[in-house]
Each structure stands twice: as C-alpha cells, then as structure tokens.
Length: 117
Image (cartoon, rainbow, N blue to C red):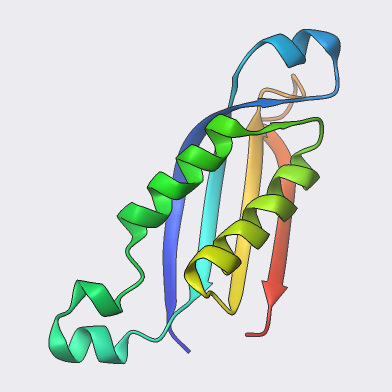
C-alpha cells in the first residue's frame, strides 16, 4: 500500500467549548496520511489518477471554514468522513493539533485512524 501525506496544513475554524471561543476563529494544524495506489498515476505520469493533495487541501480548508464544532474530536471525525466519501479513500490517519489550548503545551489534540489499511 502506498501513502500520500499532507503535513502541517493550517486551517482557521470556529472550535472550542468556551463562550469566548464561539466568537473567534482559531488555527488548527493538521497532519494526514491516506492509502492511495500510486503505481498507475506514476506509470503514466497522470495527475487525474493521483490523489491531488492540492485539491484535497482546498477541500479541507473549505470544510474548516464552514465548521463550528465544540470538540476537536468532532472536527476530526467529520473531516475524516468527508474526505473518505469525497475522494473514495479507504484508509486515513489524521492528527488534529490545537496550538495554545493548554498554556504549558505546544499543542493538544487527537489522532484518529479510519478505514482498512
């Protein structure tokens, strides 16, 4: 199995359980890994057969821009489902980091893995 990845994608979204967080946009940092067969796209040097990470990144940005969740966990679950449905991805790993949520930590968040590897 081949892996396509996106690391350190920053998105702005409404995220958080506190009242003050519901009125601002905050940055999340995302790391993603997708199962994707790369032999066919590589053999023909064909972007149409590849998982277009620029397009996937734009879809993630649009998702984040329209989202308003209390929990990072909900953001991760809904994003994973959206990407799997939109692109026919059979397995993904997603790490969502919320920087600055805990003053003594660089970031907090969740990692999830969905689908069959």
